[in-house]
Image (tube, rainbow, N blue to C red; front, side):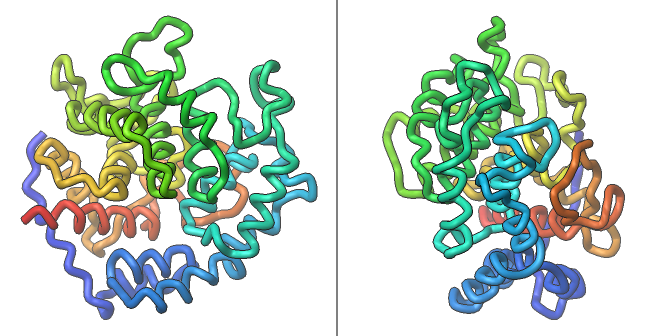
Length: 328
């Protein structure tokens, strides 16, 4: 695959794409102000505070039950469970220090268990102790660490489950010896969030960097053995070159690049092809579409639908392109 798309993403505030992004929910506006416009911290903070009281963030918080759960479950196969809503609130950037976040997370911490939502032996586990699958535990760890919860037991378990090739796979207990992109990205985000929360250990950093190398060795979407593009993942059939939001447990190229950007990784030539792929999907109107949406019940609608221009994918694409262009 060879592409020569212009990667320039200079976006002044009067740019129509920026105006379109700002004409949106506070969860998008504050990230545009921080990541694309580089506005002063106080302006970013003021906008971010609105996530807890307006729009999608406020709607999600209002859906929490008095028992601390969303969707009546720690986890379910839709997207409206406690774990999924916490992951979405993390994506929206709800300030963990806000009174609304502290209240919501306190209810989860003190009341929610895995009873009826995972392996029976995990029924009595507190929510932030996780269950058995590294894919699920990665999401629990990422959300928990972001919101300042104690997820050390989850992190320790994930570190013990790293495979020799550097990644992770939920099927390892069933004999799989090769890692999964889906599981690996979930675990990498948990390890990174734990570090960003100030809990740094040499063992965890080394494991995360090995997992990061797993992605880069495969140029984020190719088989290491043959160099072939991986068209679809084996488990869910999702196409890694089609960008979704929210991603949930699914891997795709844009999610992999977003991880590298947040991790502060130096732009690597092995990510160049993935970056070109992202750039090539930009429409003539300067926007990126929502290319796919995974089946399941969304707790709130946060985009205009599959095939339509997506503020989330546009924001995410612009900032990974900006990150990569910083190498020049």
